[in-house]
View 1 (cartoon, rainbow over the protein chains, first blue to last red):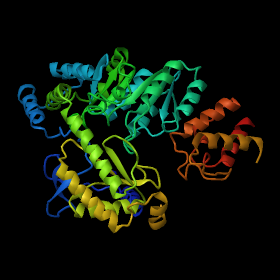
View 2 (cartoon, chains in turn orange, purple; view 1 turned 90 degrees about the vertical axis):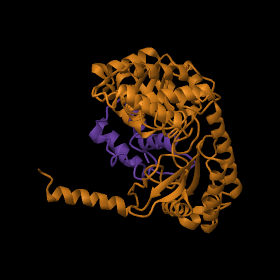
View 3 (cartoon, helix red, strand yellow; view 1 turned 45 degrees about the horizontal axis):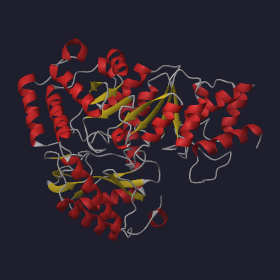
View 4 (spheres, chains in turn yellow, cyan; view 1 turned 120 degrees about the horizontal axis):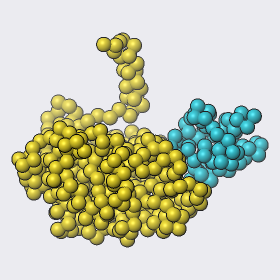
Length: 415
Length: 80
């Protein structure tokens, strides 16, 4: 054992620095199933409190849906608890292939491969498919897991200004000498909730002979008329070469992710992706539940339609109250506060009023862009949203930020 | 400001600056959050292609790339 005093002192010092900078993250214990109403113990040891959850990725409200839970039980009963194997040794059951086929059908892609998470999918896909003869050109606001995945790959890691098509075009022109070019973007950007211009991206990809990669984790299941995702909303079904997405958000919310797209790319992942080759197969309980989720989202658009209505109501309510919002149309609705401490104070005040919404600040978002990120769910009923709006308005009045924009808020609270 | 610094400054403004923010050759880039370690690759690649040089990773440190003046020095050192 070599965890000596020096090591302990070193790590305690680093942790203290994180605390001193106000960046220490604490977990809040939820003592109920994930839903619109949850019971929370916060701070640790405090009595449980019933609050409305305004920050889950539970977009379709399927995390605790009775049919999904029932399907999970069936997986457990008929296919057991764990696989005790990676996929290619003895970890692939009939239900795994069934789920991959169902996802391909839903997303309208050629094939799909499951991973333990979308983070793993992003970690594995680039180095399986590209090498140092290639260039990856990513939007500068892509998710951290994409950046990590790109860094694991020997292809040149390039970037373009967020959603700036002119800048992207310039980069595509610069790298015409590369073997393959791949444009990399999120479908919906998780912090601002804005949507990638996939139609324009696909047009540029065609013009400059580039592949298109989209992480659609914050869109799969609800964006587009049938909830297929950003590619459906932007009218480019079948044109995205690589889609990665998660089962950990709208699609049941447990865990698991995938790479879906051109069959050769999927097969390259099956042969070479390290997170696929060296980690266990998804447990049956998740696979059968996810199969049910895909069945539900393909059989009716009721839940995504309700989510759309809820989002409109919520956005309009906050706007009318006078909050400074990031414009958009997705269920990610960020309320801009700019100052990190203000975001923490408002989050705490909301909690006291029975609303669970977290403040986000650097390094999760850029310096000076602190916010409360609210996320709407089909599990929310109108009374949840009305109560949350009343609480937000009350707190907004307390801090005198209603009707004020960046300039006024930062004059009062600093950046 | 010499021609090399001007070229780098122009590139940095075009590549990274939004909202018309004004910067000079000594303005901090990485420590001020204007350029991060991910987007810095664009700048390194631009310099390598423009001046036909190869910048070793240890020379492209966040400290060395924190302002236009020191980036220009890195290029000068390699060009000899």
